Length: 216
Image 1 (cartoon, one colour):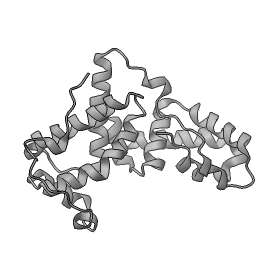
Image 2 (cartoon, helix red, strand yellow; image 1 turned 60 degrees about the vertical axis):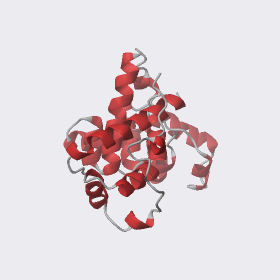
Image 3 (cartoon, one colour; image 1 turned 90 degrees about the vertical axis):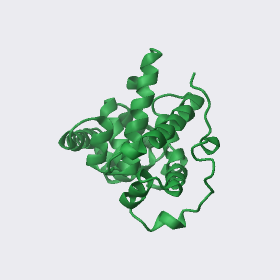
Image 4 (cartoon, one colour; image 1 turned 90 degrees about the horizontal axis):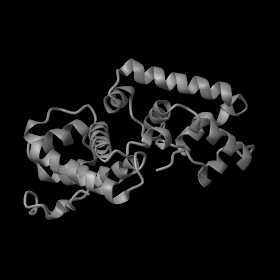
């Protein structure tokens, strides 16, 4: 098991004071990342506060071990701190963090011989808010749609979740999944084509449902 680390107690950043989001909220991610890799600690806190919970949700797709995920996130940020002077510009902070966390989790799970996410990871689940999207659909209809979504190959489920739920571009998805941009786009098209064929009666609601049918 990973040792517990608490970022705000680290001797490297113990003098950091809490800051609000206002300082960076109007800046683009390139500006925030460049400030971070140049040694600005306030941008580090901003990145951590903005993405820690999102990273935890993403990590849940690979394992249900909450403490393990939190430890991986802590380790990820320690690595960023240690290596930030050597980091290059990032296309997307969110995409960079997702890719780094995925590599870390899979590396550690593989070491423990528990690489089981391929079958169950990146699942869609009916959520209560989805029921209001189309009043013409009942719970049974949503259950059918959910089943078809979860029947997609894991790589297609992953790209659907990253693109529709997390709002990532094909270039960002390609970085996370370690594939080419055209492959990320093709995976999405194949998934949508399959869903449209399987769910033709619900085609009008499908794209709205993709945003709501994510389980983290």
